[in-house]
Picture 1 (cartoon, rainbow, N blue to C red):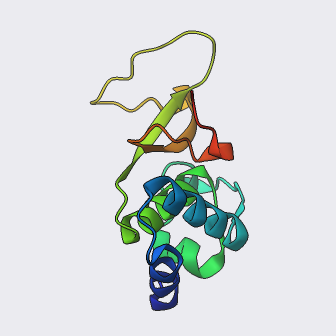
Picture 2 (tube, one colour):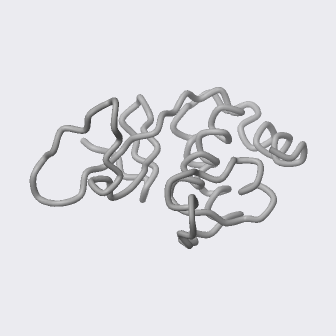
Length: 124
C-alpha cells in the first residue's frame, strides 16, 4: 500500500482500543476510497488484484476489495481472513485440491469477533 494510506490507517485508529470501532472506521475509509467493479477478462476472474493496486486505482472486484480490506485491517493490528460463500440452495463440499470456482458466489472478509463488514451487521 501507499505510505500515505498506511499513515492514514494509523491516524484513523490512533488512541482507539475498541476493535469494533477500529473496524468501523476502516470500513468507512474503504467505502469512501474504493468502488466495486467487476470486469472478468482472462485470468481476472480468478486472480485477485493486489492490495497495492487497489490502493492506487481505487476500485476492484470482490476478491480485490477483500484483499485490500484485509491489508487495511492488518495495518490496524486486526487479523482478518478470506471467506468463500457457496452459491445455490444446497451445500457442496469444496475439495482442497481443486477449487471449484463455479460454486463460489462471493468472497468476504471474515473477522474473528463475529462482526461482518458487509453492512456492518452484528449478530445478537
